[in-house]
Length: 230
Image (cartoon, rainbow, N blue to C red):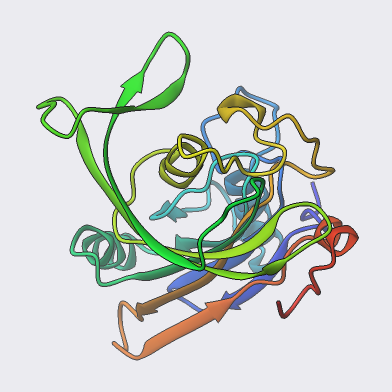
């Protein structure tokens, strides 16, 4: 199979492959024959370098299927181990953009919660601060500007809990556009309006600090968001 032409490469070398993930495609973990970013990225490497057999790509970060933006893969096991340690130690800087619903959205803020998995509903749930089963989830945000439908918001998560941004915002009455799982009643044309805008990390071999940004999907322009700037 030829590589997926929709795969947008942000950075590629002997140790890394970074792509701008499209909304609506799972990172990995899908049934055989179903599309995923990991499968497309492996096919890209195999085709580009004429590699026989299986292609190694280590998944060191993930994005939910409906979320778009910067997604990092490691091309060697050494790079994967070093990058994974950066995520564990929280030395990786992550910035997201979102379009959220809600009339009274504050200019800036910090959210601190404890979250647990609700397995039957396949979602996360906020619990009391003293609940020992809850995992700490913190983030900071700032309002960028008002849009035709909602607010454009910049978010810096300090933890990496599953669905963290989605549930923390929705539980305060600010659901992300298109996110029906967490209460949005508004449709969004491509996945949900949550985008991994920026990722900064140390190169696993050279140790040089790398900062990458990803343009938002074309669907965002309908709401007044230019692809490369707020």
